[in-house]
Image (cartoon, rainbow, N blue to C red; front, side, top):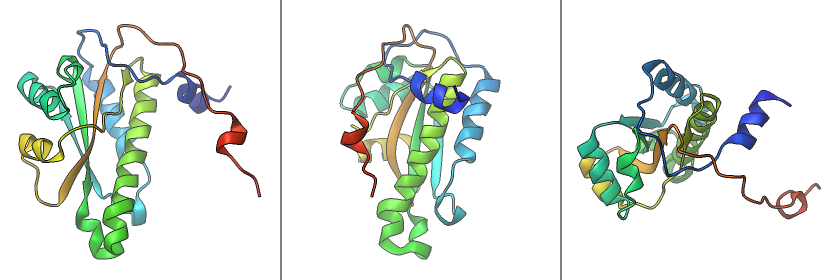
Amino acid sequence: MDEVLKQIMARRSVRDFQKRSIPDVVIQKLVDAIIWAPSAGNLRSRKFYFISDLRAKRRLAGAALNQDFIEREPTVVVGCADNRIKCRYGERGTALYALQDVACSIMNMMLVASENGLRSVWVGAFREGDVFEILGLPEHLRPVVLVPVGYPSRIPSPPPRALTKEVVESR
C-alpha cells in the first residue's frame, strides 16, 4: 500500500495522550509538514503557534468550552488564518482561501504526526476572541483550529466510513 494512503487510513482523532513530551526532531517534522503545504497564490496566509506551556494550555482548554483534555496534551498547535490575503484576493481570500491554507497545513501535520507515532484531534469548538487574547494575536490573524498532539494512550478502531457512492459522483 502507498505510504501516504497508509498514514491517511491510520490517522485517528485522539483525546487521551501519554504524559510524554515530543522530541524536538519530531516537532521540526511537524513544522516542515506545515510549511510545505500548498497555499493560495503561495502567499502562505497562515500562522501556527506550538503551545506547551501548561498555563496557556489550561486557558486554551477553557476557551474551548472546557474541553479539559486540551490542557493535558504535550503540545497544542493553534492554526490561524492571515487576513492580509485580502489585498490580493478580496473577501474570498479572507473567507475561504486563508482557511483552506490552514486546513491543508494541519492535515499535512496530522499525517506526519501519525507517521511518527503521534495522534491528534481537530478542535474547532472554541471562543475565538478568548484564543485571540490568550495568545496576544495581532489584528490580522484569526484562530481557526486548536490541535492537541501527543503520543496516544490508546489508538481507537477506525470509525465507519461513507460509501464511495455517497461521497463521490463521476460525470
